[in-house]
Length: 210
Image (tube, rainbow, N blue to C red; front, side, top):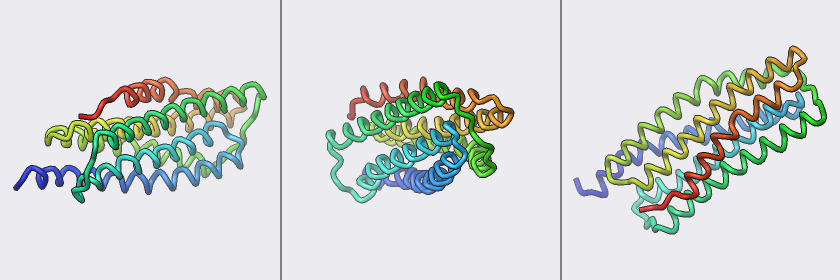
């Protein structure tokens, strides 16, 4: 088996994870955004926005993995650009959450109860940690096969998936407390992800491909 063929096995495994990520995130985004808007929940809308970013992150990584599997050229510029795109997505998420949470707190906005939003948050809290764990393992596997740049890209995507799980959990807590008329709990819960998003955004931005 030549070196390129040896690379294909971990790449194909990672591909399956990215296809699953895109499909799950698309459903999450649709349900969370619709239920969030209807309920007036900042946390649910922020969760939906994060799911959109999770989907875009999966598309970025998917493009690099497909290039490897189909033996298309993957230049340093292309990989560098992919890391920068992930960084921008992390920063965009942090900015959106801060602005939307601040606005909700200023307005003393009271969200409505929303069973559908709670259901999708519960499902994501269970599914996303498992997906993030699988991506971490896939990242290590890629690194073991000499694909260190793709490994770091996959690791950053795994972090985005873990952030999605964290935001799902904080959303669940915030929406539940908001149902007890603690209006501030909903937007404050959405702020849980900001620190991690900024940290990972900086690391992705500074990452140099091999």
